[in-house]
Length: 483
Image (cartoon, rainbow, N blue to C red; front, top):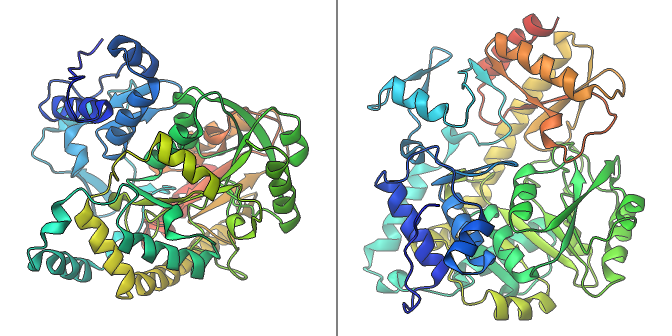
């Protein structure tokens, strides 16, 4: 058991003491990269504190990149150099390593979880954004403006839910872009979606049963599992989460991605939304968590209104992020709580300070208020639309015996091969392995299932971080691998 020193007499919250202690131990190298941290339950018992206290500390370390969550294994310490520059850079179409850390030590860190990490000429990653178009000059300008007047207020603790100016900017954006109906008092700002889900678990309390779409966003599954919630997988059809399957469970919380189901890319139908809202309204303690992770990028038809905007019962907890629009490192997410949940929040979690720096909050609020956010978002929509069209064009001309799905929105596409089979995962692994032999990384849909079922073998291909020439090269390599 890793020793953690805490002072019960201190005014600093216990979770913050644990977070700071582990952070400094990792920074100083006293806890080596690849080290598995104690389970939340185990450390809670050892320190004689609540499980939620440990979850909050781990959640902050996870949000800041000091630790990594490995599904069904636990939390592991990240290599410290990866927090700033992972050392891998694209040169002549290949990733080369040129960091002051030796290649051997880098490989040791990469292999710390027992798997040899392969480098790829093209990675069709589902995460990340194209940082070539980040408005660096505008960001520097706003940073300078925030500090130029020696604004001492920015160095004080600030509002626990996040600065009012930023919450007002978020409220305006959500109302205009997503139709979300809320007061600024219902908005909570936090450092990343992982932290927001952990904070939400504190609000919901223990003993909840979470219904999750199957397949689903695995990080959310890992977080809910880590806090001890019972998770029941619910099948997804072409209209969204199956209501018949949901009603057969004892779930009192439903976690959904209705505007663009992850990873299948389907949109929840209007009728299914009404059925889901009626399900939540039927019991007092039922709620819906709406994860609206990438609703900004839609390539056909009108924007899909948020489920929260159609909720007359106050049953939808809305969670969103700026990671896909601005940059992953911004680590800013927001949560809109129903009014009756705000009372619970005040009692159970209202004493937690916002985990986002007030300087960052001021910069982002000005990014909204001065119109930079809207212009940047519109620019990225055009850029991703062009990448999306380029990938579609290349895939259609490649001659794969696969159907292209999920092409109406988002930052990834799906390739569905053949018919339903109980060997789907096995077939996907073979396709992934063949692609890797040609130095291309693609992703198996099997990795996102809580429980496997008979289905069509499907490969996921992202495009946000790739240039046109990389998309062409990647598809050409896939042709050599699969045809």
